[in-house]
Image (cartoon, rainbow, N blue to C red; front, side, top):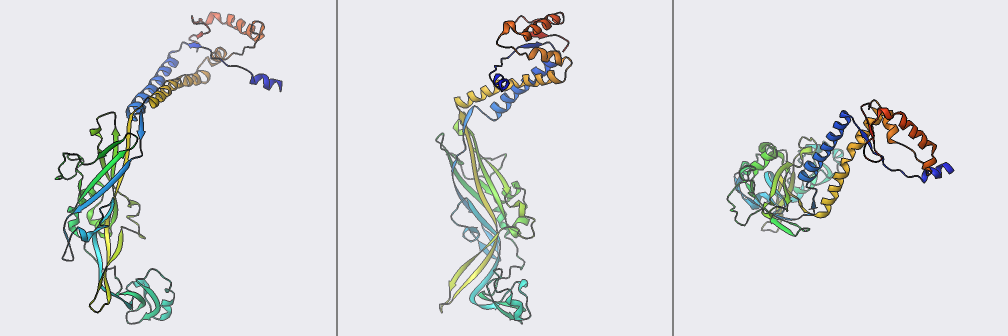
Amino acid sequence: MFGWVAGFFTYETTKSVVVKSWSVGIINRVAQLLIIIYFVGWVFVHEKAYQVRDTGIESAVMTKVKGFGFFNNNLMDVADYVMPTQGASVFCIITAMVITANQTQRTCPEADKNFNCSTDNDCEKYKSSNLASGKITGKCITEAERCEILGWCPAEDDTQEINPMKEVENFTIFIKNSIRFPLFNVTRGNIGENSYLKCLYNPINNPDCPIFRVADVLKYAGEDFNKISQKGGEIGINIAWMCNLDQDVENCKPKYTFTRLDSAFKNSLATKGYNFRFAKYFKSEDGKDYRTLHKAFAIRFDILVSGNAGKFHLIPTVINVVAACTSVGLATVLCDIILLNFLKGAKQYKAKKFEEVSDSVSRSPSLDLHQGSQMTIKREEKSSDDSGAYSIGHQV
């Protein structure tokens, strides 16, 4: 118990040992140089660690689609093929549709082949199914060899072959985006005051244009229009505001990138593409309701906005400068590991680096022993002119 208490109330102080070794000296300087290059090149220049950053971007997006196309020999305009119509940051451009016209509320045979039947017993097991076009009544219509449904008839047959609207490739998407960095009270928009909206986006020749051709967006996302227009898909248009506010605020401009968001499912057999249904309702002269059902295959566009702004601040600068100065000392740790474990003369280095001294220094036997040992190896060593420092020569 006394030994533990005595060991707890001890004090450690550094001791300087000068090692005259070319190999260790080169390792030390190279390690220090690499640490300095890392902090200067990566931390301060690349990562701009001297700045305080604002990632809480506030954003608003408005979109407009322009173009005309033909589907089933009918002219389609924006009101026909864009869903929803509010011009929000998420919208769909319909490329193909399965249209079931003049549906009324009555009973009729199901069109899906999964509901084949020969007797009523075959349909009883489907009565709780939600996969049919209507409510399964449990009756088999033997003429059609299909189970009977109660709902909007005739039932939809979505297995028919459809031809996509080819003109979608040339449709244009206009994106109006305004952002604000609340920490710095900086507001920016992706359309300059002197900009003319008679352009098409190009990442090299026209990277600031906010008008995008659908075919170009798909190309930049690595997708083929002929494939995605058949079953639909989801495309992300990413707007990144990476701003260095130490420069002129006019240099704070967005960068556009494009990706397919549902790429994990584009080859799936269970669920592929993107589609939805909507109906247009009418009333006949006799007051009977009927509708036209549309199953739409569409390209869904998601406008994703992110941002990161930085500006010089004293506190992060001081913190990272101190961290850099402290990290330079790691080179000493590396050299100590090499000296204590791998080089010839490691025992001699340990004897000089570590020494125990009691509170009665003048009469300490360990001190006398150390002094004696020091006199013994005096011929092999040369003392440093610095007080308290030892110089280990070429034996190391």
